[in-house]
Amino acid sequence: MRCLLACIPLAFTFVLSGCATPRPLDSTLITDARWRSVIDAYTTAINTTRSDPYWHHHWLGNAAVLNQGPPHKGLCWQWRDHLDVMLAPALASARLTARGIHTRRGTRMEHNALIIFDPATITDSALLTAPAPNPDSPPIALVFDPWFCGEPAIYSVPDWSKLSFDGHPVGIDSRPFPVGQVSPPTRRDTSPAW
Image 1 (spheres, rainbow, N blue to C red):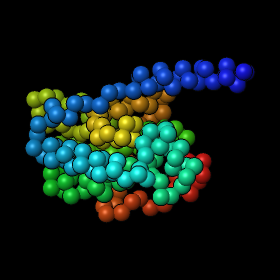
Image 2 (cartoon, one colour):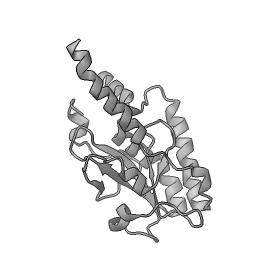
Image 3 (cartoon, rainbow, N blue to C red):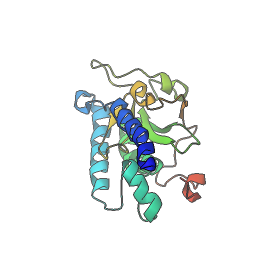
C-alpha cells in the first residue's frame, strides 16, 4: 500500500507533463514546394517504419528496446539517425539540411530529434533562435520528432524547446550525421542503463 501511495505523485507528474507537451504543427499549412517534398518523404518514412514490428516509440517503446534488445529499435536517437538516412535524398533534392537537436544531454531523460533547415536562410549557430513558421513564407527551421507518438510530428523550434521544461539546455549537434549509415557507436549504444 505504501508503494502504491508513493506512485500516485509520480503518475500525476506524468499526466501533467503529457498535457504540457507542445502539440505538433499542422503540416498541411506548409505549402512551400521544397518543404512539402521533405514533409511528404518524412510521412512516407514514418509509415514505412511503423509497418516494421521491431520499431517502437515513446516510453513503452523504450522499455521494449531496453528489455528485449536487438532487433528492437525506437529510442529517440535511433529515430533521429534512421530519419537522417531515410530523408537524405529528399533533403538533397530540396537543398535543405538536417542536424541533430537534443535536450537534457547526458541524463537518463536525454531526448534527440532531427532539425531540418534551409542553410541559405539560417546558420547552424542561429538554429535555436529560429522563429515559429509564418503562414506567409517558407519555414526557416522545423523539428521532426516522431518518437512521442509514432507519427510524422513536426514542431517549431520554440515549441520543441519547451520540452526541456526542467531547465536543461537545448543544443544542436556540432556535426551532420553521416549520410547512408547510422551514427558511430556511443555510450548509449553499449550501456544497458540507456
